[in-house]
Image 1 (cartoon, helix red, strand yellow):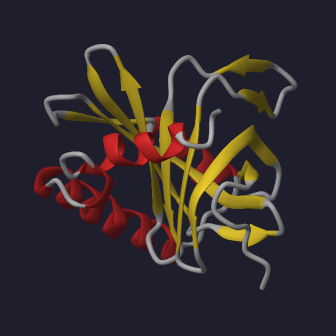
Image 2 (cartoon, rainbow, N blue to C red):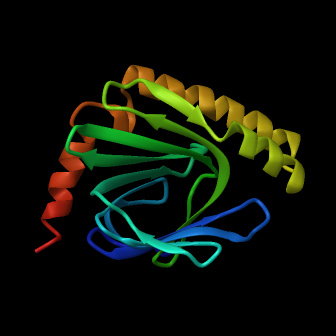
Length: 176
């Protein structure tokens, strides 16, 4: 299995359960890449939506993916603190210099004070029917939603104090 090395530029591709491309982040710097974990960073990167629209991210972000967890976490560094956007998703997979995963609609937005909101439950219900999500996927996602909330409340993984700041400092060493 080919795994990009630290410092490589990778692309992140998000798909829907149907197999259609959902969103592509054009360039992310890989800070840690193994079979089980990927940590990357980007700032002002081009994002392409499935409908062809494009936009550019507004702030630096640290992206955390795990091969055993059905979620990924993006920590966004803003002037008033770190905001997190968490996607309930399939575990990631490498395809050369492309990190791929399936987005399952449900999201959690976490604020700097560690309060959070669960988002897109209606979208999940609609897509679950449209794309025939198996009952097993529903069970896995609910369990992983509970796990993710435990991580947030326990300040585990990317929610730990200094996690995002430390990885951002490493990212800055590649930006010269």
